[in-house]
Length: 135
Ligand code: HEM
Image (cartoon, rainbow, N blue to C red; front, side, top):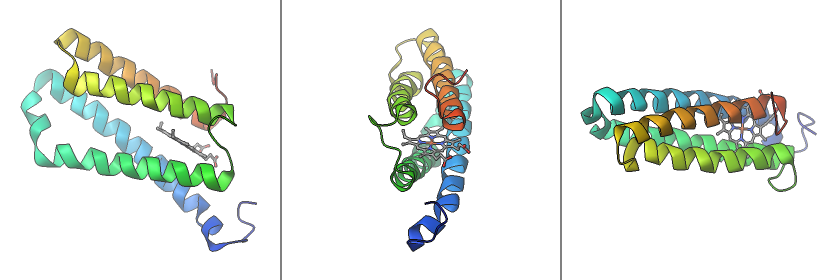
């Protein structure tokens, strides 16, 4: 199916996958950086670009995710590994807001930050292995 040229869209599968991978990498890098700032230089988190750029990248990540799932016909609640990614992504978002915003103490924020990074790495491992339990 992929690359068979039925429609122009499928010719872009690899491009969209590259966008997906790049935005995943950038998303983790920015989340990592913002966690360091949260711990040492919280004022930097209020910079205008810091409040905008991660949302742009995460939107690209999610949009490419939906396109890939649709094009590859691998759907959540049908294919286990996609379900695992969606569920883990929701957990990552929840932990991420605790880490950077809602966590009441520094210790809670640090723990949420580390847990969020672990969940993100799990999502990446699921992506490459296409297994719910990738290890
Ligand atoms: C929950 C929403 C997501 C969905 C529905 C989704 C779906 C997909 C699909 C269908 C592929 C294509 C696999 C292939 O053609 O080999 C893929 C690849 C990939 N995804 Fe996602 N994804 C999501 C979120 C994420 C997130 C948050 C990350 C960040 C860790 C991520 C990282 C990757 C990577 C690294 C690949 C490439 C894997 C490879 O080269 O084999 N995805 N994703």
